[in-house]
Length: 349
Ligand SMILES: [Zn+2]
Image (cartoon, rainbow, N blue to C red; front, side):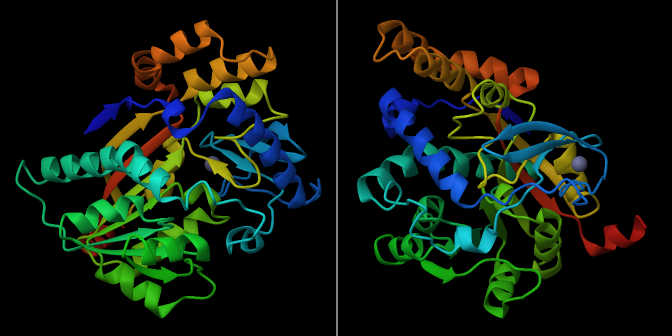
């Protein structure tokens, strides 16, 4: 099943010109704190397909993004200290997300359509019948926007979150079962591995781009999950109009190719590589905000505020963005995958 376009008005999520200007500056200041200077002697390979063939792509505040010459994914050459970055550092602002009013809005606007798409894919895969989900594990669940719906459907919902502020919100305000931590191949956590085994659906929305070794992450989930499990994940996608917008504004980015948070931007070929012999893709949904990004970037560069024409153009962004997504330039993609059984795995060897 393939789907393109997603109706959204970013202005409803407080993404107006003034806020975006501030976000860009904050991102830049925060990014520079974690900068490890690039060492040209470092041996680099693509974290998605392991090819050693790459070209420099763009430099954003001293962070060097490269383009893999095999899978064409974009990856960061000089990695920040990921642990420092993700264990709820006070410098990483989450106020925007740990707010009940914004939670309800994001839940309805962002999470609901994603859950509906996953259910549609699974029912379609099941020949039109209802696909039975016993439990759902969301890795990097943040405040629990997606799990809150899952819980409402009467499905057992468990989240894993490393930021203690978001974990606390999800537990106390949303009433979810949350495991505080993250998947680390070098230090396996029994509680997390058991939760992976128990889940019929394992999701990680906008997580894989933050992980220094996405291959190990997928391998771990494959290893610990049960044979019939479903994988659902969302990643930033390349090539896209949003990548182009980042290229023309690389001294002030706030989304998509944003260092040091986003370590890699995936091509569909890269995703195929990372899932090879482990998972079969049964559904894809490509969407984005490249059109919004280009208009916003231009308005900010020209120092325009609340221009009527800007707002009129943004009013039309949904149908225009849908065409951009359909012709292959969406900046975000959700994948729904079925685990290949070990029997099939061994017979293919
Ligand atoms: Zn690659």
